[in-house]
Length: 389
Image 1 (spheres, rainbow, N blue to C red):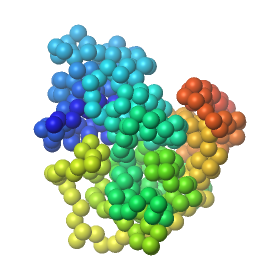
Image 2: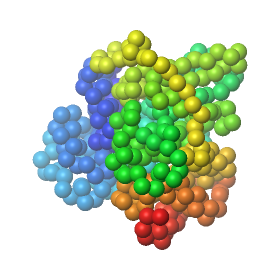
Image 3: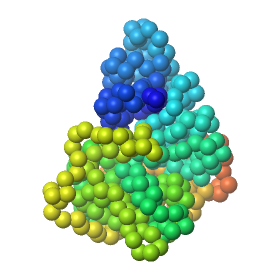
Image 4: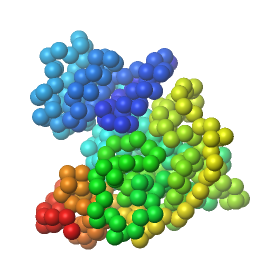
């Protein structure tokens, strides 16, 4: 049986690699929907190749430039800020692949859960913003949420070696990013190009910057807490520069199960699409004889305070993780547009969080309001900065 895929964020790094998996297994997967925010040119090429029933362009300026009058027969076109949610409700899919970045993936993920679609989730912010609510919705609808992140894919695989009550802790590995070993004073003048030069993974700009600050690992801690129902104090992060072990699970008898693989996102993507089955994958695979050493270090929270900030926001709970996620999104965008320096990201993040009044028992409408509040406050902080400190 061919699995019908709705791919949100098809023009980004994860989206393009997802389509590589589809190309390699045309007998297993077919594309019924594609969506992007702004990159209409890549979406056009993808549309001509895969002939989906629906496509969507969220950015209205990009949508106006899209040649909708030349679309293949039978392909519907949606546009505007709500189009990702609209295509999620319209497409006759089996799996919704959420490969968007940032808060834009929030509404369509909940729409997919409401429809009962299986969700292959690559968007870290969705679980950070409302993980408890999403998992509750998924359980009510009987919807499996399968992670695409290499770390959470690894944890999911390791957990199959024991029962939930036997889990002692989850160990998430981090490459350390491009600035491993640097001290705080060195971060004031690092260039955008340096921050985007990840030593191991090829990713989109936003997640690459989050990796450089270790904020992404904080999001992954929150994700793991919700996905696997494990308390925060039993989720550890260790730095593993080789990125061979993608994460581990320690069981109560002292056994530690690890998932190893090449640093290629196509592996966890394919596993998420075919779960619970495994299908063959061509291309590069891990060769154990090529590994000279595996090393591990504790994270340096003085140099990378974003990880500590994320842990604390998760402990506070309620709407604080959502506020934090959106504030970081704004700060990373400001950094990528050369409005603030790299070292300012954690400073301004803490400043923004200090303004938030947490709602512990929240609704979806509360999250939407928190999104607006966080963007407003954080943009004001960025605006007051005027020049890089």
